[in-house]
Image (tube, rainbow, N blue to C red; front, side, top):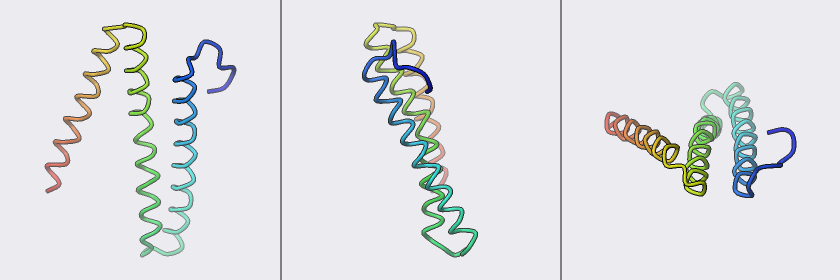
Length: 103
């Protein structure tokens, strides 16, 4: 994400900015959560911050997948669109499968 923004659409720049903001929020959340957890093992706030930071890091690839999906639609690239939908469907199916196992 260094360099100029030449060749990027405004949507791509927005997604790149969101990904960068998400990364730094997740990083800060993990750092503060870890500090709270180390100082007080029973801290609910530390555990919540750690989980939130991990969730933020996990959402970054999904953000990129949705950006790829929108870009494929805009460019009329059916192969990329189909492949991205397949990846999202697989991720959704695995998430639902794992959520059912937790019950």
